[in-house]
Image (cartoon, rainbow, N blue to C red; front, side, top):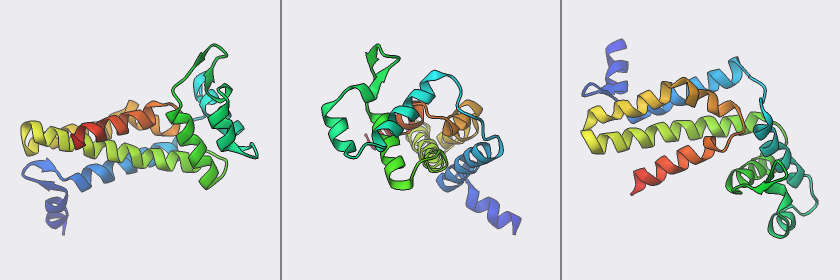
Length: 165
């Protein structure tokens, strides 16, 4: 039984893409549920509060298309809108709260780990998949799933784009 499981998770002395995805998602979910750290610092609060503000408007699409104040950082400069729109979409679909945002970000972390493993495999053969496993178990990247920082969306998107090139 253990040998059969090992052969499914590790092939040719490198982890499979499925094992990398499962490891990344489970570690991120364990961190999000087990540690459940609160949002710290101003910018994670700004991302969430501005997305909540837009989600509560009667016509959020009108606000997004016609106003800029929903994506102004610290009342000084305009921030890139993609993460705000991601949060807004999650809040509109799943309701207010951090649970589903964290679930989606855990899945995005797993996708990023798999994308990096595929990139590594293209560069250095099957052993390059270890890059994805290292991404999956790297603590700062695990912690990213439980907060509202743009990197939780941009890193998976960037790695997916490089993977698909």
